[in-house]
Length: 531
Ligand SMILES: O=P(O)(O)OC[C@H]1O[C@H](O)[C@H](O)[C@@H](O)[C@@H]1O
Image 1: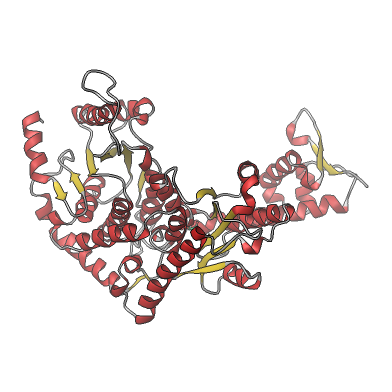
Image 2 (image 1 turned 90 degrees about the vertical axis):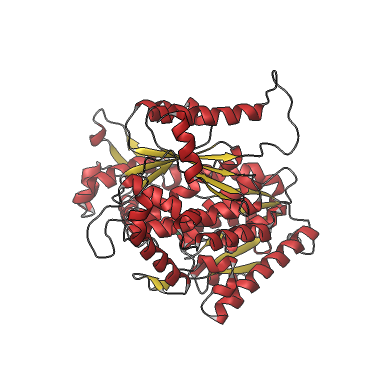
């Protein structure tokens, strides 16, 4: 397309909203001029689905629960008075608690002011807070934040070494909606252990954010933790950033959570509109639908030209892939839906995978994210009439044009600046786009039926490890090949898991499993020394 024709298309399709401080340019997606007209009946159904969701319909049939993350930023919309009250009370409690921490009205177990937050959580209980912290935390932050979002012992050690001198001034947020996620409970136990080794009363540092009556809730009550904040059934992990999951860590860092909530609320108001061209979430969902032809299997590359948005793609990866990656549609047909999401930041990505985007397979569309205000002060002039921010701007336009020249499609989202408000807008925008897209392709965006399968196999592996350790322990001094062990414990079909578990155990001396190396790795014998 000629440059002048592109400009006409740009003007024709630019979505611009001064209240939200956002522009969405879809002119470089190749949909036809009658696309919106043709798709109208479908998107109208999606609008209706979303409306009933917001009114409290049971939108998650397998889990039999409502989906109400929208109510978190506008409690008056919640279908029941008790929900409205609980949401409002929780926001108030978060603000009061954080203010007491900041003012030193709540002190650590050693009577010191809290300086650090350690967030222990995974998936939806970490990705939103990580994204928001990276986007909004500055040097004048009230409390520095770190994260434990795995069960990697080396990860634990590295972080504990980093914060050990300020452990007595660290507040620990253990976040788990279900209250039973293994990675999180392991992180919690390891953190407790570090506190007790340092002779600190952990309960005066620990705060739980979890569902009522969960295992974590009971534990926090029983151990008399500093505070407990609720999570509700109607908030899914990946849409929990505007619940206590996101708000408490943000408030502790000193981020203006009222502004974050206002951004999300005002974006919800705009994305509730039934006119496609006035609804930014519908515009996004329809672009995705146009590109995937409603059958998925494509890639969405998110490239923000702004370091603060670097974790946005990681956050969206869960929001989009866990919501849209589904085997079956709502009528039980096998559909294998999904859009793969990846990206990092510009212009960094230009020096990495953009080469493949330009020359490789044509199975993706890009979402460029542009932030107009590059800095809060004036920049040094690097060369005649040019600053570093001008280069950031030029690289975005350069890559975008280079891709257009190769017939690659892209959306560009522009925000005025990165503030708690604009971050709230972006979160709500994508939450709603995901919901609308799910309706368009007739899937349930609010469950994750297959996530459990990996966890179940992990449990079987742990049980197998226990059995083989008991066997070696009961036969101390005797040496066995993996196959002999498998036969002895009656688990011949699990020989590969046994082999890999023995390798793992000998690399880690926790249970004193040793091996006699043999040329043929499968004939190596394993044992526990006799006392
Ligand atoms: O908050 P939790 O209950 O600990 O859950 C943490 C994560 O666990 C699972 O993997 C789910 O698939 C995610 O959606 C969830 O965010």
